Image 1 (tube, rainbow, N blue to C red):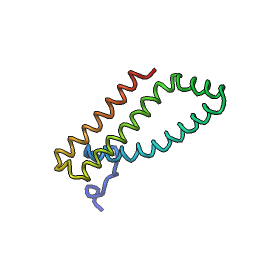
Image 2: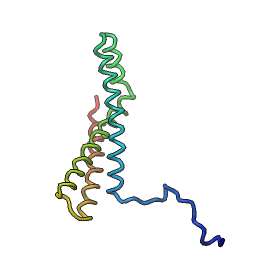
Image 3: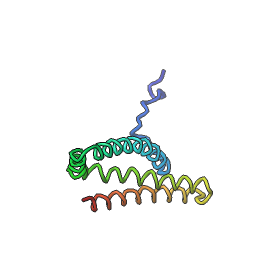
Image 4: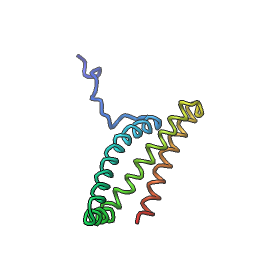
Amino acid sequence: MNQAVRPREFGLLHLRLPVGAVTSILHRVTGLLLIVLVGALIVLLRKALASPQGYMRVATILGGPAAHVLGPLAVWVVAQHTYAGLRHLALDGGLVQGRRAGRASAIAVLVVAAATAFAAALLWP
């Protein structure tokens, strides 16, 4: 077989997805991350309600340096999933029609979710 005609390795890093596809994939990923996030919050709530020492331990965890990174990240997960979900509802309801409007709404979701996370990072106690 001729070397010039052989298929090349398909590298996923070379794949250029449309912004709507990226938003849709992030919506699915953040949905999975929300399941993990809710589980972690339930564990922290149970620990905080178990005893005064548990409450102090949770308060220390939430006031520590890891929370300053994970808190805004959790806010981004919730914001990205919510805004992308509203975008999908608008697409299904016919409020957003056409390629340009779809692309603009996908970019708006990404920008507003990032702005929400940035605001959370600035306002995190």
